[in-house]
Amino acid sequence: MTDAATIEASLARAGWVAGAEALVAGWVDHRQSELTWEETWKPDDRCRYIGTRPTGEKFVVTFSSGDHWEFSISWPDGWGSEHVRMGFVEDLQEAARELDQAEGPFGGPTRRKVPMCSLPGQRGRRLAGDVELRFEQLREDLAAYFFITREGRLNNLWIVALNPNDLPAALDSLERTPRCAPSLWAQVQGERRAWSFTAWRPVLARMRVAEYELLLVCPDPSTAVILAHVAGRLQAAVQFAMSALPDLEVGRWLTYARPWPRNHLGSGAAPPSTSPPPPGAAAPQALEPAAPPAVLAGSPSRPPPSVDAPAATTVDGRAVEVVEPPARVPAETAPRQPASPAPEGPEVSPSEPASEPAEQPKPRFSLAADASLEEIERHFSEVGAAIPPRLTGTATAVELWQAVREAHHEGALPISGNWVDLVAVLHHRGFLPHLPSDRATRAALVILAKLSPLVRRLQHRRWVLGGALPG
Image (cartoon, rainbow, N blue to C red; front, side):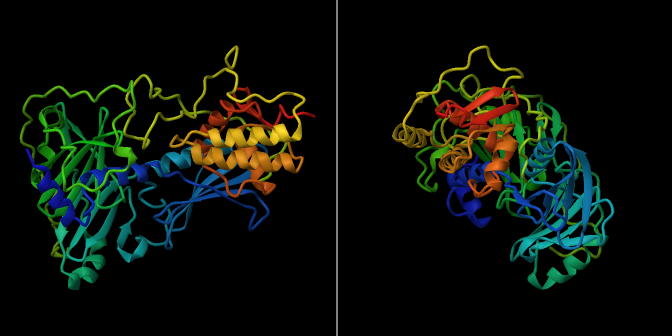
């Protein structure tokens, strides 16, 4: 067992001085970030939605004809662009969102102009291939080689000491660095489980095990620190030799790990995301211990064997089919999964049943059919003040409700269509400052429909804004 002070000291050596709980909270905030879309009609007067990732890739969804759109990826730093597929705009934006949540894409285009591109801030290089080799300078004296599959799995992770004078040689030798057989994993009930890459530092890799999410931090080439959290609440932490990482039996460790002390003085102040789970949420369940694993060959911390390696859109009237993602388990009946934890309170699911219920619940605030202008304005104010905080889609609901209010003042209501049509029309007419993400839009509509009859679902894929306003 590793005491909390040792964990905190190791995180400080990795460059994180705010404490383990604050690191988990920062990670949760990072995972909650959504891909935002910018609408443009340049350069050929065709509607395009462009979403840009922090690493420089651009997801481009371009109108083709009818209901058909093209999804392509524009890679950074001379790698060029690549067609992905055709489809409905909602499906393509959802595919882009999933890639963004996986922190991809990886590997570069299949037909690239140059083999390498730079990381943002000149922190390293990316070498294209089915297994992308990414060299990143973590600190002045520490670097990492990431071997990343196109699905985002880490085949290998080499942490090496770096002499700053050797950095140019390390970058020049990247193309000669061999891609070895996978040697980075952990044991989950006797089976190997791959780690997934993340670009959020100081975390180098992540892994989901049941309701837990594991975060890997390496303060030096020989040390590994793992933090385990559930929905943003740190549960346990351990430190051991990097060479022992492939032999870690996660189930046994989580079963017998010492709970993280809540009154640890060295921890940074924990924001709301580290608060206890909401009432009714199930407590984390320990995994069953597995049989002792066999000793496996290969060490993820060995340096590169190469001798050259370093020592160290207007859419009015257009009907678009929407394919909703599968509904997730509500937070009231099961613990939230670490894939998309919320800081506090239950998460609003953007998915809805395949057909409209026989009788929809009445909104919290009513509006008479013969309401006066003063009553309508009062309704807008009451609903705006009642939007619940800290839910998925809350910020978008505030912006969307203000857009509906401005559209009413300009006589632009009602507006009907699927959720993509609604926000596109509001944005094109200047009522919505930007195009929110798919997930946030769906969640915002669900929030507002519970509060006001001015936001109403007509059927599974169609909504109306302002349909209940007096004519």
